[in-house]
Amino acid sequence: MSETPRDPNPPEHDEWLPEEEQTTAEQLVEPAGSQVGVTHEPPPRGDDAEEYRWHTGMQRPTGQPDAVEFVDVHKAFGRNKILRGLNMGIPEGMISMILGPSGTGKSVCIKHMVGLLYPDEGDVLVHGESVPNMTDDELFAMRKKFGVLFQDGALFGSMNLYDNTAFPLRQHTDKSEDEIGEIVRRRLREVGLGESEDKMPNELSGGMRKRAGFARALVLDPDIVLFDEPDSGLDPVRTALLCELIQEIHEENGGAYTVITHDIMSARRVAEFICVLWKGRIVESGPAEELFNSDNAFVRQFLSGESQWPLGME
Image 1 (cartoon, rainbow, N blue to C red):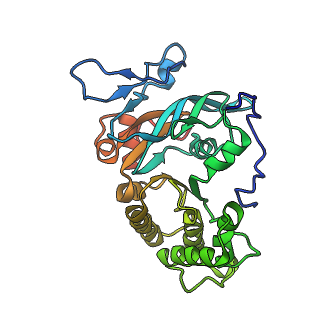
Image 2 (cartoon, rainbow, N blue to C red):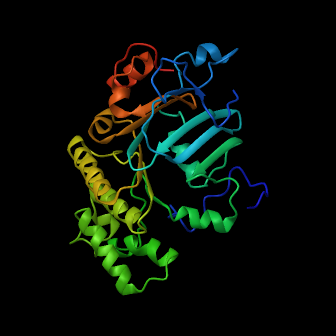
Image 3 (cartoon, one colour):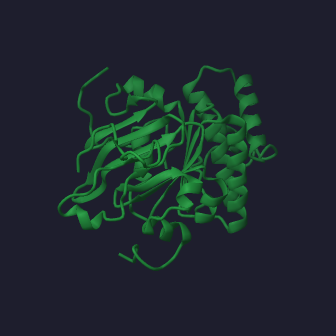
């Protein structure tokens, strides 16, 4: 495996995409008498003590291995520190949601997972393999494990729906056009667009573009599917329908689904595992039911949408 240093901010021109404090990897285990398997981050020190007073770093167990793991990841853009010692695991076989206030680094996490960004410090592991230490060929192969649904679907405006959905198969496989057609039409039927394959993106509603992007994210049978604010721009009814679709497709295909969202109702509908991210670190993470019943003041406030303390307008 190559140890050659990489550019921490590689350009986002890969054909894979459309255009348009210190902690070891082993977490400190709770003292005897606490919940078995629950781990915590070390308590903050010095200037961080007040800023991170709500960050227990509690990681409640799921019984599943991690598909993706962030190990003490730091990332800054100039003086703007985004990830500040992030330790987070995304479990296999579950629908996970990364929740948190705007600007706290949720979308930056996605870019680290697929190798579009690299940590300034720390490591990101996909199925136990270090993404920053991959060679270009290894990175290219690793990306085939991922399907990504971007906020607007990110469809090519010059291609109809069929060709947009077929694009990853033509780029990354040697399948014949007959095989590609079978896969594309099956995925379009799954998302309710079986009769729309000849339509151009500008003929599709916002909800249809989201579903089209979902179909394209699925054509390579990915092990991990990432949704970057899929409910952005959708009304409550279409958001609910998209959540149902995510559940249905996950039940059929399995895998590690990771959704970045601000919508708490979506989290209540589909999340099986929740990570609450704030100020570049995890406040708490664990099974959704436990997070919604957390006694952490910040987690309670954020997951209930209350206006009072500790999160304000800053």
